[in-house]
Length: 228
Image (spheres, rainbow, N blue to C red):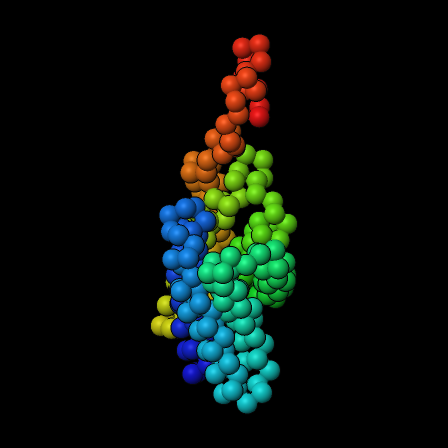
């Protein structure tokens, strides 16, 4: 009981971290301003699972349910250090690919017993896959969509619903496990994906606006604007 309580408290905190990091990605919050929150949540996601494991007496069920928290705890600690010390983020990006793979595994594993959490794990898999693509591979656009802004809005829209809201429901013993609830969660995920695309296209600077201006003689050829 105590282990579940501490785990849910940690999950509650993660929602606000994802929300604020999303605001960083869309340019609303300064990166260094979000660093203290990342360090606090990251530390909580390492300390609380450790306390749970100490109390588990080696119970395999508790261990299997707890160890993934370390992956997310290290995520926020590492990202906080990146924000403070301007560390090369490529290592963090590749680390995120491992976290995404674990999330996919747990999403598949949870489908039968808990379809809602299966969708939540799938959402986290998408989030950490985006971190991998952006920071590990350095890919910043997918067609006309700015991936930085898309990721930011995805975190803003779905960070709290996939972390803080489930934590509150679990803490109050109100967790749904029906197929209907799972389908509703899937609809929220798909809606969040679609809305993130719309918002990213509206808020991200256009490619031509982001490029440095060239001298007039380079921009104009025979009266037709030319790409830089």
